[in-house]
Structures are given as structure tokens and as C-alpha cells.
Image 1 (spheres, helix red, strand yellow):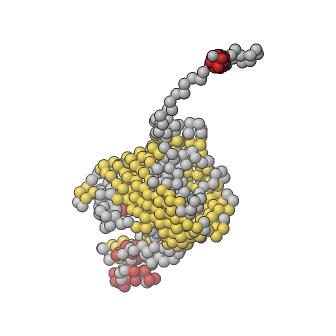
Image 2 (image 1 turned 120 degrees about the vertical axis):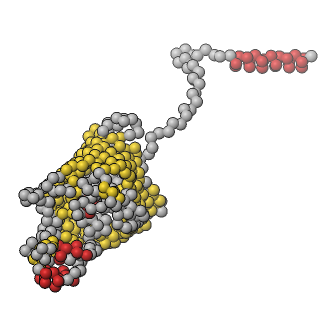
Length: 512
């Protein structure tokens, strides 16, 4: 019994102690009150897609861990949808005159492969097509089908030191002006005025040359100098003979020189060119020879530059004092051999070009994202007496206008002996003006050219005025955008009565 009483007493004591320990004790005097229980934790919010990351270097394959060795791919297309009022007398099919049309064109379709497998060596290849329409730009004349895919650039480059790089191949290290070295991916206006490439496809390969160059930067001074081959013009027939540089009077059986210079079909001298710019604010990349047209507020750039282009004996002409009678015409013969006969009066002229330009690009209000861009250039062209050349971009026309096929469609005076001034300006509007995904940048461009070969019947020089106005609509910076452009184009079918024709173009551009 005694053992039982001890067990019961022990059990009671344990139960009492347990009950006492389970009770909530009041806080000691002077202590803080116990905080209330924490609120329940809310479930995690669902993931919401954010704005796309800027494109950056694009399709780049790093071969080394730090990215110093890499392989990069760039490809892009620019497609036109446009309305064009043609120059007077244009046909769009053989024997079918057409005053205007709405058409589509492939302005550019290109690809670049760029590789740097050693910090001192760079190699890149650039190829593609340009200016394909339904009636022009194809593999044969007056045919838009099957345009020729050709090499624009094939370059190897070696870095000598931080001030000097040397390169060779088919390259774009042009002289003359900033816009002669412009990238076609980030223009401010829809396109370049083409005057910036005055010898394009005459003595070069689509504004490129085979040769060697030196480029680099010393402090704020950026430079590029090159020496290239002069491509043969491949001009044949009467155009490349002394008689082709003159006019024949049937009644008197004589041929008189026109005093109008043309490209020399025997031109084989080297081309020397260079461009130097002084960068006051942010420095620009000079890895590749593609100057940016507008930075969209990402840089503050103010550059002043100047350049030159020289080709000895690049042009030929016959003065009006050179007159051949019937015997002289017979003795002159035909073809290139006639050039070597001094009695035929053929004269040779150097191509000497130079320019001065300025580029300004700056953010205006970083909070709203506004920015301003300006570019202005002055050209001085010496290309022999009275030389004028006509070019039409992705020309929608066909046939002969006033005996000159070069003036059909949308062709304008593109270059010649004389002076040219060109300016463009644009303003990037605030964010969210057209919603969160679209930015807009209105712009205007104006070209004034005076070529001595464009004279009225009274002997006065007829100036060339070209106005472009429009806007860029950016979906993903320059990587995805479309541009709407209006052009008032001078029609020089009759130099005594220049009329202005409208062009309205929408260009769609995507590059990766």
C-alpha cells in the first residue's frame, strides 16, 4: 500500500508541474508586450513578361570565355512599297509609256560574316544584292529577274598598335566624307543622297575598291587612308571613241567635240582617298568602316571632318575646237585605238574631289528619351568639263527619255563637275507618344547642287534641288523599323523646263 501511495503522489506531482509549466506567464514588470502573430504570407506574384532586351551584338558566337574571340553574323533586308510619278517619256515595258505606278522593290538584301580569332587580326565578308525591281536590277539590262549576288567586301586587317591598323582586300574604307563611309542600317533619312558616292559603279564596285588601307585613332583624331585599283569602265562602241565624245553634222560630214567629259575607258591609274575627323565628345567605334547616321540618344557626338578623292586621268573629253572632216573621221577609226591618235583631240582630266562636313547627335531630355541629329556636308567635284551623271535608286522606269536612257524613271543628276551642299536633321520624339512599343523620329533633308553641265538654252546653270521629308518608326531601334518618305524630285528631261515629280515610299527594314 505504501508503494502504491508513493506512486500516486509522484504522478500527481508530475501532473501539477506539467500544468504549471503550460500556463502563460505574465510578462515581467517593465518588459515590452508580446507582438501579435505575423500576417499570413501572400502567394508569389505571377511572372510578367518585360520589355525586350536591346539587340546588342546580335548573332555572336563567342569562341573564348571572355568574348575576345568570336564569330558574328549580320543580315538585313530593306523593302520598298512606293508610288512614283515618272520622268517625262518613261516606259515601264517595251513600247508602253507609263506616267506613274505603285510598285515594290528590294532596295538592299545583304549579309556580313565577321570573325576575330586573335586580338590583332580581323576578317570579314560582306555580300548581297541591291536595287531589284520588276523591270531593272537583274542579271541582264532592262530585266529585274535573278540579280547578281556579289561580294561587297572581303577584308583582312592587322592591328599594328593602338594608333594604326592595316588592311587589304575589297574594302569600304572610303575617303571623301562621313556619308561616303555610311552604314546603310542606321540612316537618319530613308537613304543616302547617293551624291556621297560620286563614282559608284563607274570606277569602283558599288562604292568599294580593291586595295589597301591604313586606319586608326590618335587622341580625338580618327583617320582612314587608302589606295585602290581603278575598275575599267567597260564602255564600248561610240561612247568610248572620240566620235562618241562629239556630234556629227550629216550635212557637212564633220564631227565636232562636245566638251563633255566621260569616264576614261583606258583609265588604269590608282585611286587615292582619305577621310579625317575630329571627335569632340563621345568617341565612335571604328572597328568597321560604317559610320552611324543617328544614335537615337545613346551617344553625344560632335565631329568635324574632311576628305579627298583623286584619280589621275580618270576622265576624257573632246573640246568643241576639235573638228574632224570626212577624211579625219575615216582616219580616226573606231574603238579604243582612236584614243591613242592625238589628232583626234581627245583630252584627259583628273578626278579631284574633296569635302568638309559636320555631324552632331545628342540626347535632349534623357527622362523623356528625346534626341536631336544633324549632318551637313559640302562637296567640291572636279570631273572634267561639263560632266553630269544621272542615277535612279531602284529605278522603276525603262526605255529612253529624250535620247538618254539614264534619265528615265526616277533618275536625278547624281554627280558631276560642280559643287554640292547637303543637310539633314531629325528629332526623336518622347517615349509613349505612340504607345509603349513604338518610337517616332521625323526628319527632313535637302540637297542643292550646281553642275556646270546643266545649262539652259540661255547659258545659265540650272541648279538641282531635291527635298526629302519623312519619319522613322522604331519598333526595336534600328533592328526593326519602317520609314515613310516623301520626295520632291526634279525631272531634268528638259533642262529648260524642270518639273518636280512626287515620290512616296514606305521602307520596311529588319536586321539581325
